[in-house]
Image (tube, rainbow, N blue to C red; front, side, top):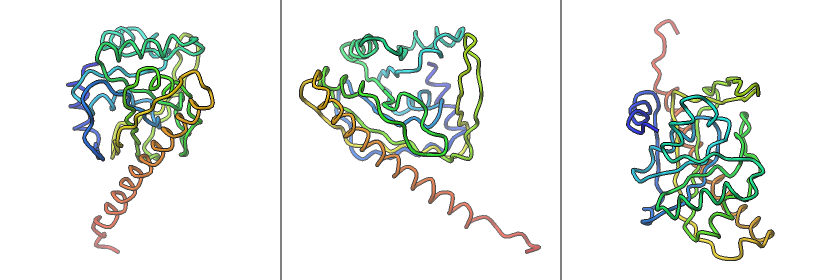
Length: 226
């Protein structure tokens, strides 16, 4: 995915603000993240130096050149109604020793704020593989999001792009789950637990954004004419 280029871009264009609540364990992990913008799958790859496969919406893979780059980098298309094949593909990445990243909301978060109802794939993946889930909460300045309409194979796709200002990430403590991945009520409970942590961490990130914005306003010199 051209991680070196992404690192250069984020260091030049964004104010990346990453807070870690604890050290992460060795070995494969599932990063579970809220999804305020289309650019999140790109920026999240800068968090760790280990191999990371991100679950990305399938239409992006249909873009010429981009799709080939994503596949070569080990990213996984999120296929709707895949009858378990998408989760199986992510589980294979874990067996290969890679970390994986998944956005439980399944869609972009509402642009005005808040979250979509989480899908259960993250819980099923965690229960079937036994690897820890690392919840992550992203916060940003919503007035800096650019809404872009794109046509991919004659279908309109709305993208939320964020290419400047502060981008805050709070990485939480790993969560470990055991139990039956075929028990629907239990899977939903695990999903809700993961999403609850993501929401809390996103709130922590939003607080840093708010504090940074207030500090900027207070540090701005008053005009001589005022």
